[in-house]
Length: 266
Image 1 (cartoon, helix red, strand yellow):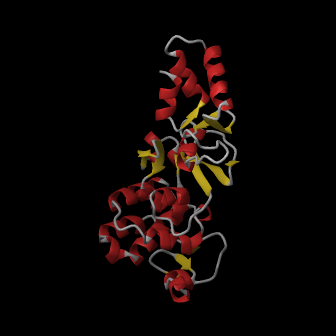
Image 2 (cartoon, helix red, strand yellow):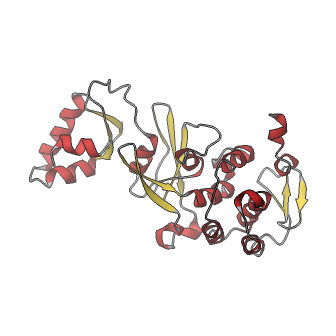
Image 3 (cartoon, helix red, strand yellow):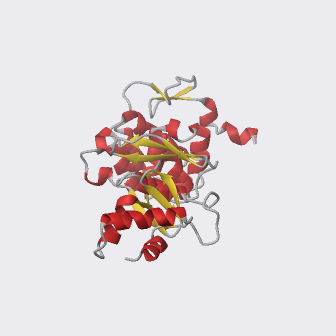
């Protein structure tokens, strides 16, 4: 594949990808590396970090060329998946726009930044590591001229409730999820139970019960979650914020979450 053809179909790419595509035509690795350096000097490419590049449209200053954050994430490791609040943002369902992007990976990775965007790795939950496809709920989407791996809305619903600190807190989570008109609730329940966390099962149950009519939640969905809820009262999150006990879920829930107090403030 010619370099220019490769760049047209790879808006963001890893060094190894370019090398594999270019040497497949019989060129040496040395020649391929020299060509890559040439295009970088000419402003056809910009370096995102060591070993990771983005193409630059003709006539655009490489220092100002927009680089899609979701394509960056997908190329940070070979299994990186856009997740948590970043997944809500990808799907157009985030209440607030962030420049901090969390992603799932089973690899050892460090946070890094690029042009004011921060990319934060999160290890795949231990309960999911032995499972096929890390518990499912990951799709590959055509996006910005490339392909991005991202959690589905169903998995994202559970993930943001499982780790609210990576998702902006309860108001941001509630407001964001309320922008979603439909969930495959069977997929939501299956994934929530796969995590093996009674607290997460209760949080998901609380949210679905509170939105039962809007999301057409059946009793069977609530019962499946209720059977895995904590046997002793638990706080909604680690801050141990005082609130009202919701006996069905054994959760102590802050009053503003129960009554969606942010709507009153608005």
